Structure formats: structure tokens, C-alpha cells
Image (tube, helix red, strand yellow):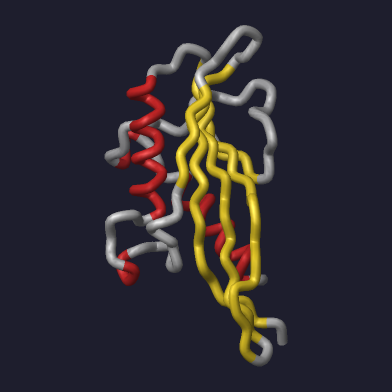
Amino acid sequence: MSKGSELTDSLVECLGRISTGNGYATDIQGGYVHAEAVPDGAQLPCVLINIESDAVTGSAGVQATRERTYSIQVAFRRGATEKELNAAACDILRAVGFGRHEYEREIKGLVTDEQEINYDFATNGSSYTTVTMLVTFVYVETYA
């Protein structure tokens, strides 16, 4: 399995632990990888995980250092409050290890100074209120 695939699997696993039973403020009901929209019948809140970009930043021999940015979107019912969205954003950062030393993180390579959070409050015709985060990781892929 490629390191990129391992990274995605690790991210899905970490985000899958976000629940009030595990000490988080948000109780994620399900996760969907490579989903552009909330699937019909999905329990809310749910998380959509997509790869936004993956670029080589350096190479040596058969290895390349890469930066992969994920879009992590938490979808709530229409009318969810800013407090709920803020809590979900904090929970995502906690789950991926923000604020911990690199050696303490389950997922190595988190770029701590390159995150972005976008809020989308439901408007006419929209069924969901969402918070979307862009989170970047650095990893090394071997091509041999």
C-alpha cells in the first residue's frame, strides 16, 4: 500500500473516533471518503473527507517528499449554530494531533501553520450547515 493511502486510512480512523463518548464536543455519526455531497439518508453530523491536492516538494533517488491537503467537511442539519461548527472544527484539529508534539501524534507530518476553516450556513434551498477545514500533511513516498 502506498504511503498516501496509509495517510488517508489513518485520517479516516482518527476522525472516526470523534464522539462525545471519547471526550469530544461533537458526535460524528459517519464518515465518507471521496464524497462530494452528503449521501442520502446519512446520519448527521457526518464528515466528508476529500483530497484537495498532493504535490511533490522535494525528491532524492526513488523517494519524494509530498504535501497532501485534505478537505474535511462536517455537515450538520440546517440551522446548526456557530458554536456547533466551532466545536467540530476544534474536534477535527484535536483528532489529527494539533497542539501535540510530532512524536505524540497518531498521524505524523501535520503542517500546523497551514490550516483554513470555512463556514457555510444554510441558505434558502440548502439542507445542511457545514464547516470545512483544509488540513495538510507532509509524507515521504517511495517509488521502488
